Image (cartoon, rainbow, N blue to C red):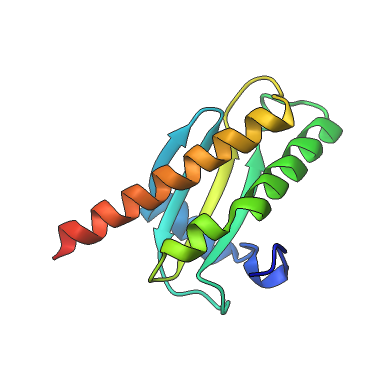
Length: 130
């Protein structure tokens, strides 16, 4: 598997994003919150991801951009957790809900925890359907 995060893997569709926030479920691993939805999308990949950082908590754009860059990097290096365990296509948005920036190592471990919580939640929901 390639450790890239190309255009096809990024969530860009406004319709999907608005549907995600109205119909989606969420999991938290502070300082991250993931809202996800099982739905068909235009990509060949099993998941499309978006990242966001609140302007309320980080006033300066360089601070927001740096956090988003770190979030994408931590996801990119650990996306195999998601890809190996999903059968159906999903879209999700990862938001930074903390009020102060954390070091990269802590973000990496929290992203790992968040992705594992997401997989557990998806498996639990798919078991409930049967």
